[in-house]
Image (cartoon, rainbow, N blue to C red; front, side, top):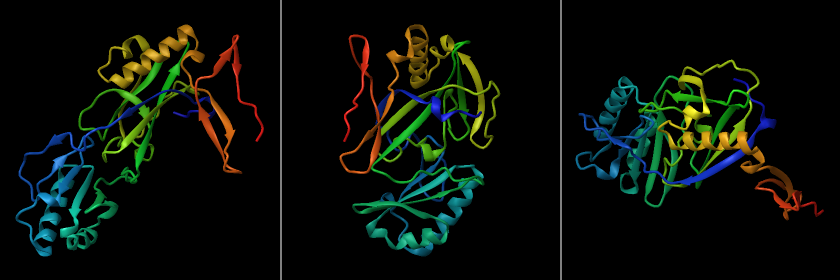
Length: 268
């Protein structure tokens, strides 16, 4: 579906922190690992007791990669402490790349699916963006089911990892923005590598869905239709920075005086 950027308006945002691993895999493995909510294998070298040399690690990691690909894991993440730094070069030989290093721990990763990598870059925080695509006349919104999620549920449409679908994956403070969008047509076109299903749903039905962000977005949209979107939107103003010649976009509720919007028109 094609969406017009000029119609994007911020509806609300939420601040969240989430744990790294959501599900522990207890099956037999060449390397002990956990599963994250994106079906990725998480391996922590600081918990190893029996892997003491590079050759043993190379053999176990090679076999583990084969196993994870057979199990259709999305990615592999290795946490390697500085005391095992010699193992990083072995991981690099097998296709791993640096993601980040902090304190006495380095993190390397590898995308395992035969598709474009959706692995996120490292940052002090991540910004996630979802689209609340609304057909105002019929009071319907667009919802999707993602293919990479281990547990399927309906959610708002969003981008790939470059739009931070891995929110909270690295223990950082995260911002999640939901944008109100207007579709250019009713036609739905999905990316089969990322999306399992996609449909229009009545706002009254979306409010009953299990996903709390989806429920809240549906409530906001329904309130906006009934009372005006100026009550919930955060309009944008292009403002000059004190660090010339830079400018920035400022999103906020407009201050009204005697029913008239107050906008900063001071020239810098």
